[in-house]
Length: 115
Image (cartoon, rainbow, N blue to C red; front, top):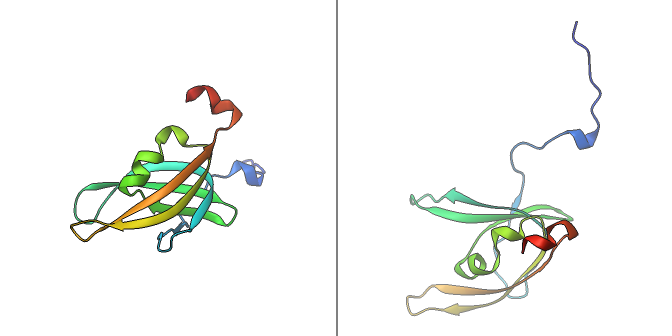
């Protein structure tokens, strides 16, 4: 007979994803939380894109990194509290919208020497 082990809620790891996706439709939109990952994921057209996931008070929020976010939201910030605010969009000559963001972060004490 197998021995049963009692597990507390902190012993469990979550599998899969139940995150919401951030669209960045309106200037002033802001997401604040702990940056938990930056990963490369396949795009339906066959190339790789970067995706970030943030743990907020309301749950996980995921979004694809725009050109501006890819320059400002760095893999070394994983584990930090971040604030990402969509400032505005600028129309390019090709007709695309280049979205501009303000990214702020707060380093946890244990990560201060890694920057």
